[in-house]
Length: 425
Ligand SMILES: [Zn+2]
Image (cartoon, rainbow, N blue to C red; front, side, top):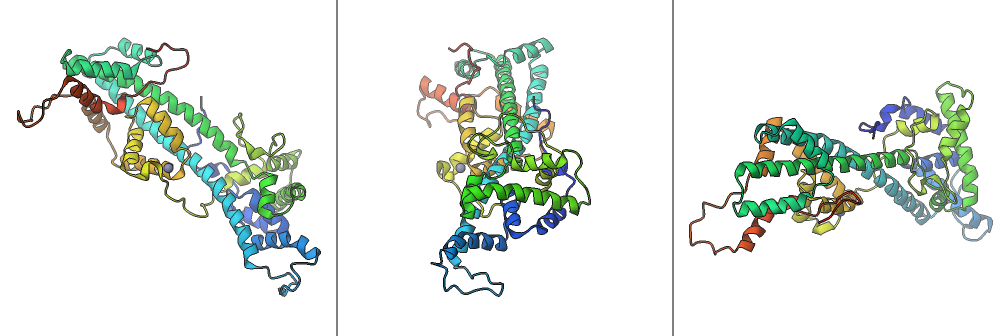
């Protein structure tokens, strides 16, 4: 069970201010400043000076070799004025990686916000169904309990299809239809709740890892344009210097193992052959009290260097909007939902669309009574069209009628995804 769902902004857990963090970074020498801003790329933007510093370093081996840089004009401080393309190349790399880490974080944040609201509204819908089952269908507490206990194994789409056929043949009364339909939706909602709770648990864990992650030495070396070997030493040194600078800004001193703990947090728990950010940990990372972790918790994620380009999923048109709406409003079959969910969470524009849609629906500010009305309207027995003037529409075959009815029930008819080992038809 998820006990610490991070619903609010993570930065509220930290007492450090951005000014204190910036003041500590300002005390560092350029190389350390660059390193700290790269390690915190999810939160901070390397400055123009940082970029120039990296470009200059990239150029140094060539300068030492006395080849390409000869003849470059010099700044007043003796540093060469570098070609614009060199600066641009570093900027490009910085932006590429910043986009990558920040998009990842934003997708996780969006999913968490979406699911938290989703579960809240789902609860209200479930309560509305419970209340209709009790008041309109006369279900006793025991009957509800039985529906709950069988929810995991129920063959919901099969039963819905069968129910549609019986309704079409007028083989059951409206009362019986409503009771069965509501019971099936009740079970579908309970299963939906379990699925999304599980998803939330996994995503919250992934975000916690992401909050404390930084780029690996390989990636840092790629941005900087230097070999990997010196990166590791610079990393350790920059982290140590930063922590000391921050302690001095805060007028505090490290006691006991506090310094070592903070340095370790900065270095991260490395995975074999790589670094801490090359995979998602299996353990839920506890938020720590050291100054490095507190720094990361104090900073909100930085904006993306560029807004993401619109995606081409399903032509990004009405079909996709309709699907996302079905997902957001609890009327999508399990199999379709699983497919759409997996694809949507990998695509930032799709996720933004989904979240925006959810917020638009929520803005209507539904009362419990409206939720009840909506569920009632959705689950009412489909009526034969009585307004048609005879002779104006072509005769419908039985198959047509069933197809039409299935269309009415469409969102709910899909394939059930049952727990492993359960019976299949
Ligand atoms: Zn997309």
